[in-house]
Image (cartoon, rainbow, N blue to C red; front, top):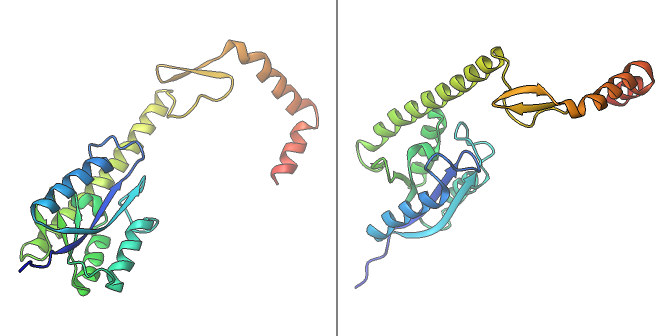
Amino acid sequence: MNRERVKVYTYKRVSTTMQIDGYSLAAQKTRIKAFADYNDYEIVREYEDAGKSGKSIEGRIQFNQMMDDIKSGKDGVSFVLVFKLSRFGRNAADVLSTLQVMQDFGVNLICVEDGIDSSKDAGKLMISVLSAVAEIERENIRVQTMEGRIQKAREGKWNGGFAPYGYKLVDGSLFIAEDEVEVIKIIFDKYINTTMGVAAIAAFL
């Protein structure tokens, strides 16, 4: 007699569309599928959010769709499989409140790479600890990024993006583009000495 396979959802997320952190959607999918196959789980539906931050569940369309499907009980799943807890979320309060909702509907979370199963006694404790660590890590990255930008500005370096017209970007610093100087002079002259500047301000207002 064949036993009924455990049904699961899978969730994948990357914070940038570049996927340069080693956790690409393809890499997550491969690892999760291997885990499901090994445990003979049946993947019923797959959800993924590309280019979405883990700081909040807001704006993560697929994540919220998954939660709606869990609440509806439409597929009778027992687990949600994620690659790592940080892919599920980096905000401790969101992670814990979402997990509680899932468990209220009989669904638990398995973090494949972290070796965490929230249906086990130690699982929820580990999730509490790791989600708090993930949130601290996210905040540190934000602070370090901002400090780096401030330092670059102090050094007179450009903080990213295309160089503005009239300048060229060389080794992270802006230099005047000599071949565009005349055009810039004409623009400033028109702005100051004609009604062009007044018209631009009126249009803006």
